[in-house]
Amino acid sequence: MTTITAKIQILPTQSDVQAMLDTFALYGRACNWLSKKVFETKTLNQFTLHKLFYETIRSEIGTKAQMTQSVIKTVVARYKSAKANGHDWSLIEFSNKDYDLVWNRDYSLTGGKFSIGVANERIKIPMVTKGMEKYFTDDYKWGTAKVVHKLGKWYLHIPVTKESPTMLMGEISNVVGVDLGINFLATTYDSKGKTQFFNGKSIKHKRGEYKALRKELQQQQTPSARKRLKQIGQRENRYVTDVNHQVTKALIENNPKGTVFVLEDLTGVRQVTEKVQVKHRYVTVSWAYFQFKQFLSYKAKEQGMSVVTIDPRYTSQTCPKCGHTHKGNRDKKHHRFACLSCGYQSNDDRIGAMNIHRKGIELIAQSDPAVAVEQVSIAKGEVNRPKGVISLDIPTPQ
Image (cartoon, rainbow, N blue to C red; front, side, top):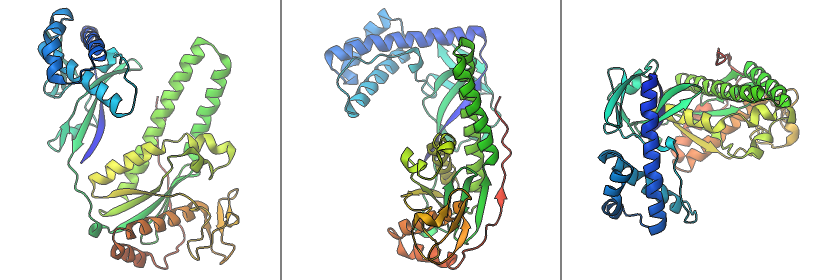
């Protein structure tokens, strides 16, 4: 099962906006009223809360039946979540942004319009469906949505779920090591010994421009500069998201069903900075690695593929041919790898991808040695030259 968040732009009129804001404010007031009662009574049983406060919420706050039921469920869920996460018992406050819209109860999507229940009626708001067509098929199920206001535009954020087949060990046909870097955003090495590079120089340059502009604006310390700074940050985030979407899409399209993608587990900043010079750390460390993995994971699952992670230690220092590990094997300045033991040479990013590929096979061997042996036999002796560089044409977001 794969779940992602579909972000659909809606086009409300001014009266639609006011109706939604009034509804969200009403919902927030009801949640905060009930939250105080839950905090005082320490009652988290929905049936008990319904019996004690349902009629009072409706009469004092003015909510309709369905909204009142939603308020009770939302407040209980929030307190239970806080308790499960080990937080001390304390009063939880709700904002007007906390309104959860339940599919086919609070909202629906029909005929290119977003229908939402407000105050004493339902309003239908036009929406932009371009690029979202696949989510309007029977393959996807809609979840609880939120209305989001961002940069003067309105969006509907909806988790959509699709049943995806789980790939079995016996179905593995290809293992791809993926090394994420700077000059090459991604370098891959697969079970046939094929290497591909995804050119990252233009992306590195663009992010350098964002960094310089941000530094200039920070020095100005004016209201207009702060506003501009916020806009630049949002634009850069959109740019990073576009890049991650395009690279992960290309990885899926360039590999067959049954592929296992192997990534380094880069959850810690220290693990990332070990590979890069200080002057490049902003570009690398601030890159959305978690988002990259998230995008690749859900796209892979939809196509009968999967993603695993391995320990990143020594992937840039180990010779894939003889196994010799030493810092001196790698020349970071010139992006070259030359083994001090056997003399094997190649691009350092490619070496990283080869070692990630090997570690991926070792990980698979823990579950099914036969599959791992098959993948090793395919790649045996295939220490080939790089096969090509892929350049992505990614427009700068406005």
